[in-house]
Length: 410
Image (tube, rainbow, N blue to C red; front, side, top):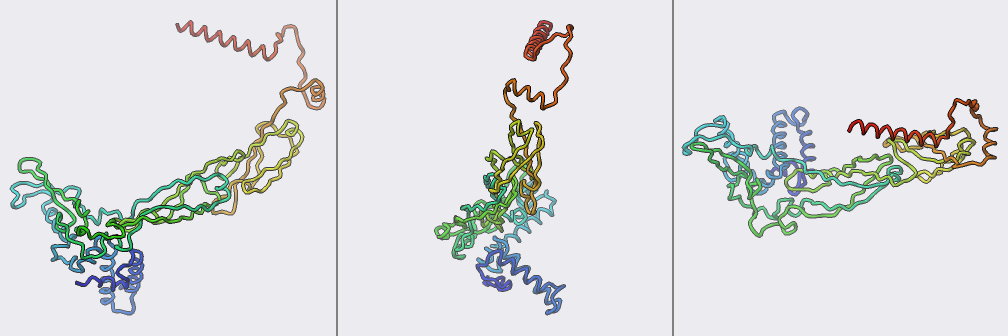
């Protein structure tokens, strides 16, 4: 039994990883492709290219590689009944497809329904990439503005290097599954009624579709027969300037590894920005800053300093009148725009504090200084009321109208 041939064809060691096998295949496939190879005749190049493709097809598949390491090329010859899982499945499927999913079957004495959903070949159903893992990361607005490098320790599963995920150190301790006779699939019959039987093919629950099991007590010692070990890794997350809320940082193939998949899923960090800064509020690529002014500052002039999130001080001076609801824009002092050497704008929203009361002297002073409306000529026909009296009377009138409406409705 020769179970080293395919490794030699690809020029890799027997414990080569999937990545090493893939790289070796790509290199040789490019070299010996019949349309590109100039060192060999076309027929020789085609033969060599076919050998490379067959070797890669076997060694890049976990189940096929395991069977090859155990039984060699014999596991894939059409005449082998013990381990030719794909051949047995093909014959079985061809048999039923030839009947169109319905028909008589010798020795069964009745009609049989077609195969259930379980008859799909395992190679077509297997998910080649493992599931991804999502993890939320909380950062503050300053981190999103300045950027930050965070380090995390993550726990994940990794393929056991002792058994390469086979769960056993010595291939001699692998035996043919008795439950499915090495096919990896089992057939069960369901009687639907008189002369009506449905056959359903499904994955063997003993060997999980592999066709082989491990001799009791011969499991890999390092991983306890699990095929994977638990490890702790340090991940360095480089949060870039201008990172937005719910943005994702993806680390390829950093989720759990498993013998069931060709490659591990991705580790995905989802950014959650917590705005705990009382001065700045983010608005897309802009920042908003609230500033309260005294009435005197709003009318005459003001100056103040804004301490930005990168510890720079912005000196602001203004000598024009600021009215309530006024806003000023400082270009290029907003949030950094990711992957661009520019920033948004800083928008300053002004509020004005008015004095609760002023004395008579100031009133007279403001009358001389500021424009005022010409007083109305008071005529005897006018009813003169203060604002407080007017508002109180208006409230009473509205209240009376509501009571009248309620009486009408009743």
